[in-house]
Length: 102
Image (cartoon, rainbow, N blue to C red; front, side):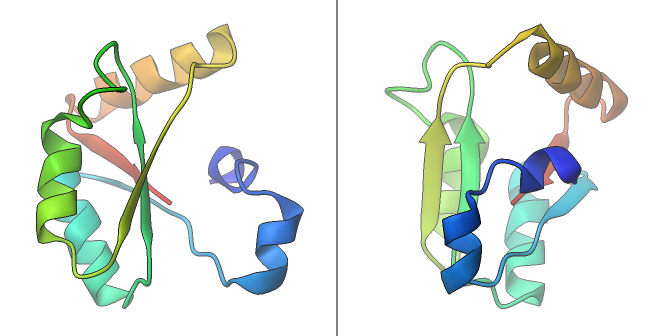
């Protein structure tokens, strides 16, 4: 949760209310369910991998096609080896079906 909250600038906190959720399950389904339950105004999802610039991936497409609010997909390189290890560990723990919802 701390890592997710550090991704948001202090300026953004002045003009919007943020909620961070970390959950496990089928990523697209859980993101959609949590967004509905919390009446989200915007869902922000990250795109990782080599094709992230041309395709948001299957989960990203499912969220975008079925979300009841706008979906913002962001991309960027992993900043360091620590983040790389974090994502590998999160994926391993979740059985390759974990989702971080921001």
